[in-house]
Length: 87
Image (cartoon, rainbow, N blue to C red; front, side, top):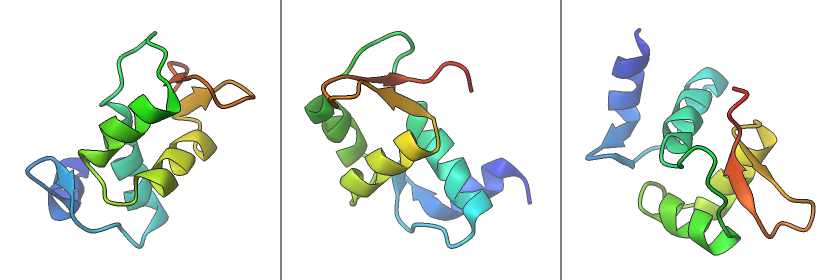
């Protein structure tokens, strides 16, 4: 199945309706969420939350997932987040 078909299965009107069971599909959704952040822009935790809230219900866990999967980076004190452009 192509990536676009996978995304269409989980996303409706841009919003993630169901969180995938398979790790590969979860990564596709996380990559989709990462596209919602502008390159080279620094975000506060609140700004990251506000962006993610538009697309997922559990934005706190998804924020953590984005960090753990190296799609977003953050300062050690958690004050600033930014898109990891190395991916």
